[in-house]
Length: 184
Image (cartoon, rainbow, N blue to C red; front, side, top):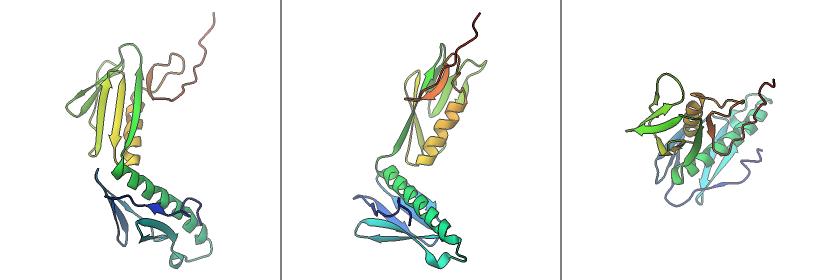
C-alpha cells in the first residue's frame, strides 16, 4: 500500500466529490475539476473523507501489484490537489530581472518586453488569471495545480535567466547560481 494513500483525505464543507466509473469530480466554491482515472484504483467516500484503495480485481498478473501501489499514491495526491484547488487555489509568482524588462496587462493578455525587437503577447488559457502588481512581477493564479505550473513555466521560457548576468524571468525565491565571467 502506498504511504501517501494510507491516510484518508478530508473533504471540507462546501466541497462536493462525485465518483463515476472513469472519472472523479470535485466541485467547490472556486470551481469544478475533473480527473479521469485508471481501473487500478477505486475511491471510497464515507464520513466526509475519501480513501484511495487499490483495485485488486484489475490485476491480470502478479507484476500489476506494483502498478496498483504506484497509482494509489498518484491519485491520492491528485485528489488532494483538486480539493485544495477548489477551496484555496494555487499561485505561482514570477520575477522579471533586467534593465528595460517589464510586464503589463492589456485586458487579459500579458504583454512582456524582454529585450527582443518585439513585445511578446501571451493569452492565458481558460481557468487561469494573471496579475501584474508591479512591472517586474507576474502572478499566475488558478484552481488546477498542473495548469498553473505549466503557464508559469511557459512564461519563464520566454527569457530564461542568464547565468552570467542574472537577467531573465525566474520564480520568486529561486536561486540562480551565477557564473564568473571572463578574466582579462
